[in-house]
Length: 181
Image 1 (tube, rainbow, N blue to C red):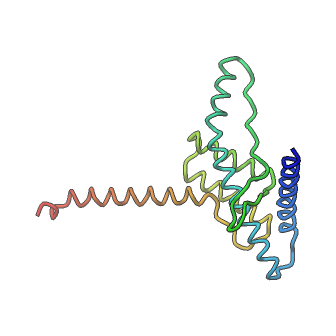
Image 2 (cartoon, helix red, strand yellow):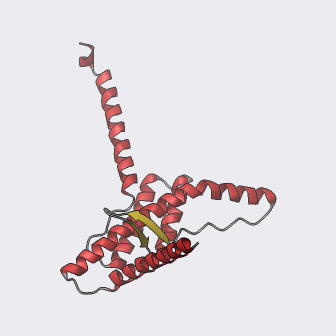
Image 3 (cartoon, one colour):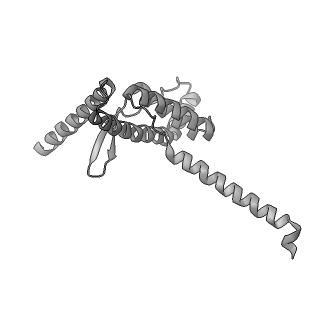
């Protein structure tokens, strides 16, 4: 019992520190080397946070859609979309750390993940809108170069395009008169 209380306190403290670090990074105006390093660390954590929230929105989309359909069929009001977790955990090189991004950004990214999973927006639209959120978070933190959001989707798109190009190339080669020699 005492261990669980201590663990809850440690988690709460880690969450408070994550939020305080984000706020500190956003409030830093001097561009010393230490400030740039600190802001870059918080930007990296924010990127990971937004990526996880996007995935969370996508994963919970199906359950939300089912709840909406059940409510509609029962004549009840449509349920509210769930909110993303305000804190996420990410694995750093040496430890698991809590991350924080203000709710307005997290909610947008969560909604984008849900819309993408429900095929309400295209992959390109999801990438564009997710990057807009990342740009605003980067601006909020005060980093010069915005971080790239949802890189895993960009990789998926690139792989898909590469596969399509290979398929097209193979079809072209098969149709060419020289291929019969």
